[in-house]
Image (cartoon, rainbow, N blue to C red):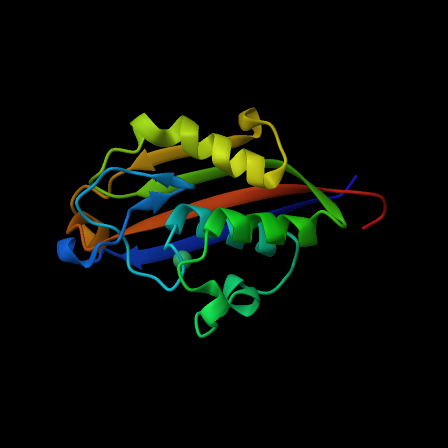
Amino acid sequence: MSFRVGLGVDVHAFAEPGEGRRLMLGGVVVPYERGLVGHSDADVLAHAVTDALLGAAGLEDIGHYFPDTDERFRDADSIELLRLIRALVEENWSVANVDAVVICERPKIRDHRDAMRANLAAALGVEQAQVSVRGTTSEKLGFTGREEGIAAQAVCLLEGLGDS
Ligand SMILES: [Zn+2]
């Protein structure tokens, strides 16, 4: 049996309150006064998970598959993009588990984490128990501490199918 682990990291800046961006995290619209800036829906959590999946499978980075210069991906649903990458990865691998951390002072992740896990698990074709999402703060330090944006990190473990 072969295993591969991958690490995904992503950061998005907050939009100004008047810009009308929704805050999308793990496919959940989180009620908050500011959304994140990005070419897609700026779902920083979904992007970190996608990046972890790509890394574990030894594929290119997320921008290779979904360039931010491509109009097709403007305001794209990042959960759908994750589903597309999963289809690529599952030719050779199955997802054993994903663990992700969202780093921000506000909003609180706790109230939404199960909905995020459900969305990510559905996109990955796994049970919710195989996906963990947690929130943490950076103790008011750095750009997340100054509430300039949100960061997310994820690890993904893949289990080889056959002799990949
Ligand atoms: Zn991103």
